[in-house]
Length: 192
Image (cartoon, rainbow, N blue to C red; front, side, top):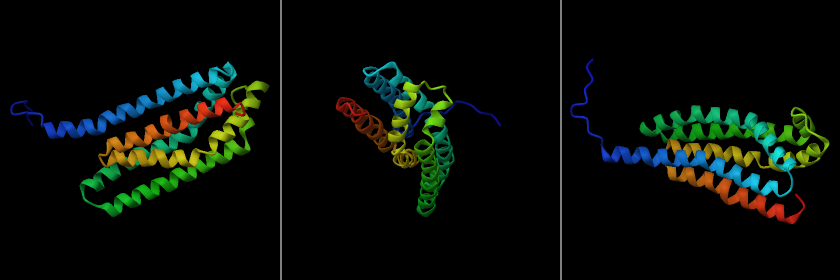
């Protein structure tokens, strides 16, 4: 088999479709960093312990979210193949199954964080101050795990269907439009 570049011409429509999915994907990765930066700026006003609690939460949440990302990695090509094969029933089945598994995983994470927050924080040799702050924080944050699971799956489903802009919109709404302003407002109440 001989491969040559003779006659190779990039198709504008193909490049446009690649960028339509690729640019939102890049932006979604950047959104996480922007959210973390904003949260750290909000929390540092309280104490460095608050920032440390957020850092510990981020490490703990990765154990809960990692299987969700694995589900995504399996779901995206299945949706893409079935979208190309014009099999909407299979796409719907795949999304429903992914959401079901994601919600089960997130409910397990919710239960662990609600019932055993002191144990989870203890893994990081949390000081008494960090435990006092972290137990409440984990319990509040964990309440939102099921919504986050659905959000992650729906964002990836949009991306698999070539709707990168909708995928980006879902991520922006969750992390920057809802999460950061809610944290900022709660930080000004003095109760959290």
